[in-house]
Length: 60
Image 1 (cartoon, one colour):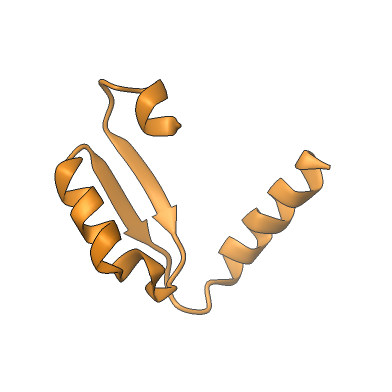
Image 2: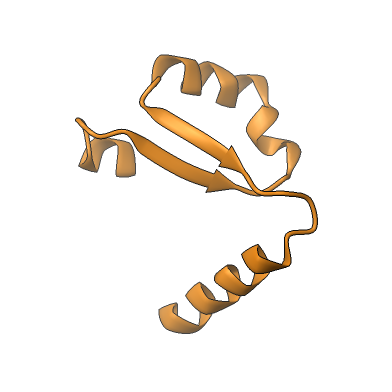
């Protein structure tokens, strides 16, 4: 949805250190969309847990 909503912008996404973003299907999809730049969070990054908690609170 974000890719369609912003067709002319460079998009930077933060992904956790899970291996899901290394899946071949994901790599193929990203190769087709060079304007998307994934950024992997560091292992055991406690600041990311705080951000996730914050978004959980504000979406309730």
